[in-house]
Image (tube, rainbow, N blue to C red; front, side, top):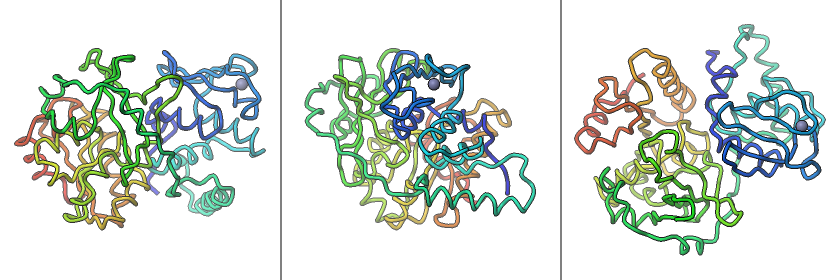
Length: 369
Ligand SMILES: [Zn+2]
């Protein structure tokens, strides 16, 4: 068993949107705030019983309960507390890590010190118990609620010049219903499931497009309704690219929606085989979706999230890709675009620099590893 995630690494994978989904799952009815999230105090109450005094701070990644609990705690502690209260289970850190890793479709977490074979059975037993207790979310099909598409008529649909400059055509924006919500100064990106059902709307702020601090995607929040969905159980753009993916038996997985829009602009809708996982992890469920279309090869096309060969981010990215291969490689051929020559800028998608660079990277992708 090659260990990969320890607690800190797993925690670093959790975006505020993941925490939001987790609190929803645990019954805490979260809301976004300027600093992160507020929710019911499911740390010491049953859902529906406490006040809304549980705060999650995005910058520290920690929760603070302003009524009963002492000290700050993280997402794993929250899971342990909620399982105790709601299910009378005595969970340990490892149980919470498995729960979170499986819930979000991250690679399996490993107990860092477990080198003893005997523990494997114990692990399996624990996993088996999750399934029996209905806490197992691995590849379980979860119905995502449809959003009434009427909401899309409330947005305006101006030309987005920044995006056009970056290489996304007006036509592609129109076809993907990319709009604008002046209330939050956000570009609106509707998300559909494979059958074209509207399941979520993400907003991308226009204030300082380049700034990472403000460039974050958020689900749209209008009139007290949050248009979110669990990102790990869908693939953005699959409703549009599924026919071509079926035909070519190949899919390219980018991190962000914009990369799919660039792909469509460069190659046309009739050659589009792109999808976006909207994060930097690929879930079992997402692989299932592609497998069902008869896909034989998945090309991972993640952002160049490292500054130098061998730095910490480089190690994390390579480990992530190796892990995806390990996890799904026996079901589907996994290849990966990896900009080892560093011809694209830090943090950019392989398609950001246009067709020639993209095709060079695609041609030279890692095929055997
Ligand atoms: Zn509490």
